[in-house]
Amino acid sequence: MTAGLPIAPYLLLLGLGFFFGLAFEEFHGGQARPGGVRTFPLLALAGALLYRIDPGRLVLVAAGLLILGAWLACYYWRCLGRRGADGQPSVELMVPTCNLLAYLLGPIAFIEPPWVAIGATVAAVLLLTGRERLHGLARRLEVAEIVTAGKFLILTGLVLPFLPDVPVTHLTALTPRQVWLAVLAVCTVSYASYLLQRYVAPHRGGLWAAVLGGLYSSTATTVVLARRTRAAPAGIRQAQVGIIVATAVMYLRLLIVVAMFDLRIALALAPTLVALTVAGLLLAGARYRLSRPQLAMEAGTGLTTNPLELSAALIFAGLFVIISLASAWVHGAYGNNGLYVLAAAVGATDIDPFVLSVASGGASLPVATAVAAILIAASSNNLLKAAYAAGFAGIRTAAVPAASLVLLALGGAGAAWWIAAGAAG
Image 1: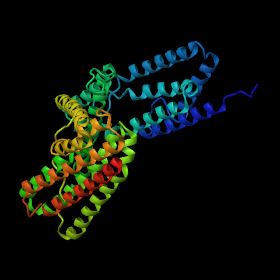
Image 2 (image 1 turned 30 degrees about the vertical axis):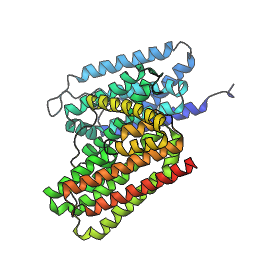
Image 3 (image 1 turned 120 degrees about the horizontal axis):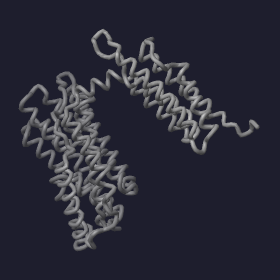
Image 4 (image 1 turned 135 degrees about the vertical axis):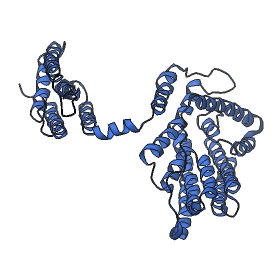
């Protein structure tokens, strides 16, 4: 009779209930509240036993939930009349919510995989114990940021599911879904970097901000740091190092977004991009060590513009489609050499639409050709950033970062030539 008895779920829910109860009592600091290290395991055990008695219809589980909910409602109603030292009602919804969740852990431990019960418990403990931090974050957030988060949910949860995954024209094999996935890939990386830079590390040193700026936009970071050298000459060396670091991180950003669409191209790109990243960091490290005694660390790079705007997303989608069509046409009409010329030309602007059009198969390219084209575009973009640095900071001030960017561009172009020659041979 005991051969098929599921012992593991009972042990799991008792452990989770005890863990949940410990966090609950620690949070309330000994105050009289229903729930805790004894109540939560018993509630979880009661829910589990009621489920085991009637696993098909769940009538007993629902009845137990109603009884517990009614008792908690009475407790909550009674506590509404109590006042704390500040004159506010001494009651909160977290208490009944935690009790209800502890009860539901019982059925969940038997119905769902173990990670569901564990994940729910851990999430509840983190939300329970992170009250001060979460309320502090809510006070720091602006209304515009909440609206932006809503826009992100619209882009991912509402727009994407309704887009067809079939080509709408014979001019390209791209589908509307692939186009929007490209938009989301770039927006997600840039938006995550923006949030980290603004809310997690707003007062950190410039090098940390340069790393995040490289994930956000290495071109924008270069312009901001180059301009800063004129407004704050004491931070010249810090800005020089930051420009090189942002470009080094840019290679990792390209690798991430390419991997989202074509793992074969990403794996072929990885050795070169990682090598260029390491080379960039070595150049930045050498400049840092040489100038360390005089290095003035400043906070942030000034990149506070939110990248997640619907208008910007639509513009990016339009550019992505146009460049994909252009890449397919140029490759069909002029072959690989024509595509490489186009890659060098788009490197003088935003390379993300071109890189993603190549990675998503808009031009139906061989892997070696795609890798060479992406490296050429990145190298051309480095030359543009070197020109920006010299133009905004002055030739003498920008000599070191501009020379470093040119070296990285030459390295990328050399790797592209070697890969293209190997493919042609």
